Image (cartoon, helix red, strand yellow):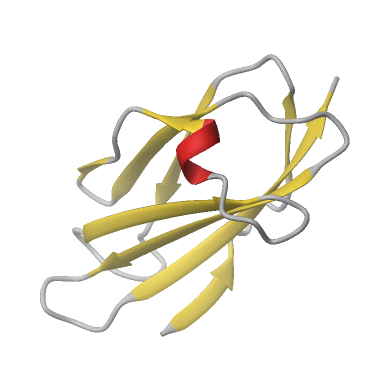
Amino acid sequence: MNIREVAEGPQTQGANEKITYTVTTTNWVSSPASVAMYVDDSDGTDVTSTVCTGSTSVSGNVITLKAISGLSAGQRYRCEVQFTAGSGAPFECYFWIEAEE
């Protein structure tokens, strides 16, 4: 499995904001499938079920992630996105979210 941090670097999100992020997979694969996402807090605890709502979707080479909200100011979160290209090997990318007031 390849692990790569997205080129855009850390994202900043207010504790009261609700943001739906997208990931473009052109640098890895075309037509991603079997998408899964996970969000861990600063302690490495999986908080996906607490901070994510909705569902992921794919359109061409763009993955639209679940909406992320309810973050705690001062915490750093890691959002991991896993996907495949057809029946090929899985890929994984990640990005950091810095939660602010």
